[in-house]
Amino acid sequence: MARLVVITGPSGVGKGTLKRGLLSELSLPESISATTRLPRQGETDGTEYHFLTRVEFEQRRDSDDFLESAEYAGNLYGTLRSEVEARSDGAKAVVLEIETRGAEQIRDRDPDAILIFIAPPNSAELRKRLEGRGTDDPEQIAVRLAEAERELTLRDEFDTVIVNDDVARATAELVTQVRSRLD
Ligand code: 5GP
Image (cartoon, rainbow, N blue to C red; front, side, top):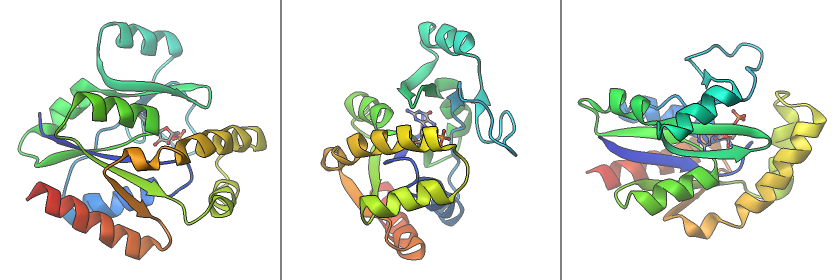
């Protein structure tokens, strides 16, 4: 299996945007996660996520199909071993974008994993982004902000913290960090 690059941090911090910059800059593959969350408008099965029912997810978890998995804001999310294995061939690393409980599981099980925590410049900015992106209803935003408060306290548990104060600057820092760790 290729090395894992784990991008973690609270929902709304911009992990996805920074990850896309990293993938294109270093030509790395990403693992498509599984989730029990319903698809948002425009999301399709197998592209953003493998969308599973809770029963399917739990069966696969019981069969040890996941490298890590966690409950987040009322839904289950997890990294399938088969995803990472399929994308490992010839790759220097496979990139995961996951919340902090899953990142802690990878950190505890895989000493070679490269863990990067993306932090917001401040909590007000995070709220603004969660509200502004229009993907979640007010109830979901409240749940995610509560999760974010918890996740923000964990930043020092990860080797590297990048503050997403400016997308171009933070992406460049992410690329530099990962490149130097992979060389
Ligand atoms: P969303 O519902 O906004 O797509 O994702 C919610 C949170 O779950 C985000 O922080 C996202 O990074 C995280 N997430 C996505 N895939 C996985 C996964 O495979 N495992 C874990 N632990 N978290 C994930």
